[in-house]
Length: 635
Image 1 (tube, helix red, strand yellow):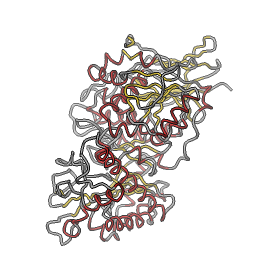
Image 2 (cartoon, helix red, strand yellow):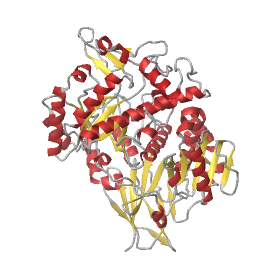
Image 3 (cartoon, helix red, strand yellow):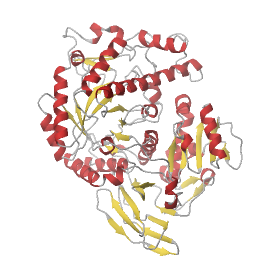
Image 4 (cartoon, helix red, strand yellow):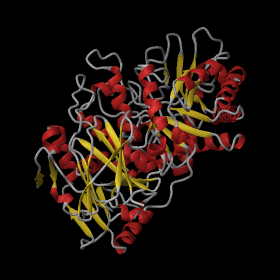
């Protein structure tokens, strides 16, 4: 059953200024990673001053420098020259009151001109390499990826190759001792993302197989049915592979902080909430618990992933991913290395950059601009500077901690995603999209935050795996008056009651399917079998198109609402949204209350309201990509 709406689409959002005191505990103390405006540069022995000067002029804060030590075999063996360059850029950045962090590879290592070199990883240490179950080593040459040059040897090393790991951690300590502010660890993965390796579930080298045997008693080459998620031993292999890189990143941070207790460790990871995380073994949900921030090179599905080529559906799914990351982070910073434009003649690169930036900052995510699929530079430096100046001016509203008010929780179950992604992911994504399009306040709840969740309702979208701890916390939530809504698969053991609702077929999955068929039509028809089970709140009403999304929160003690708008977007042709001109906010508040309206890349405006009894309605000025509003209560 689906509720029909006219194009104007008006709904009531569940939240209230009066409930701000019931928000969860304050997030961890913020640091420089929360306020970065990222630009990346290639670092050499003599360009540190030039890098920092350019960063200052273009309003970059948080300078990424590429001077990889462990990922290049020559400097893995002798890092002296690169360490000096890292020290120099750190000093220059600090003199300018900026921060700098250096790129290093995770398990990848390249030897330049290996065919002519006396030494390479393959020549010196073939036993270090990751391998398919057939024994084929993870060795690649020019053309396997755009960053591998002709004549180079590119290898992927087992994190359990302890002689390599010992040297690697020594290099981490040496880098930390230079005074650099952060270490940026790129793609710490199992090799499953190059052509021919996607379904290998590597690695089956002797080091890795031996470690798995020591931990489980199983022979990974004989006792595991690869790709069969019903196989208990394969699930153990999946868990082992994810735990491997979680522990690897934890060890990097421990080594770095042994030399510099204030250094930040930031991995770059492309898989997000989708099943790719299980294949490469880098799960951002787990990693947030052991690092200081994550730089998400986030992408999913097919296509080129450019902002200029995204459909409205794509934009909405990216919102689901980012909202999930903010839930995983628990107050840590979320950076996003997405790409805006790569030569598409039918789209304007400047408009693509602006739409991409707005879609991120309105969720409290830090924006990183880069051309094509590279890390350094910009598609348009002038536009990047314009965006960064605006972010810098309004960073308090954008990046200070956001406290939930009275959210509807949607449960992200790592085990359900890991073992049953085909059912869990559509249900999870579609449920969040239903709530967002109905302008309900949404909080992503995870096993780490379940016990402290204080919202009125919690939705479990096809959650097929529930631990004993999770089951106990769900029972505690229900006993405290919380409402659990189980969609589809049910592993909770909860009995239906006024506080436990079970819906046999997930409304979220159904809504996602309808959106994929006809996004515009499905956006005007939301599933009532879910929404009618979620109580509304009469203290705040947000009226806006279902093609725009709203995120209410308490920031700096005031009610804020962050809007993103994707109306009218057409891939390759129209990347700038059609302005949203009919948005309004109705509050229960004193008649002297005012509202501040801040459009993306615009200036603050004060909006007066229309009083009707104890309600005040504020009609917002038109905005295109996004806007922030906040309430100024009467003294």
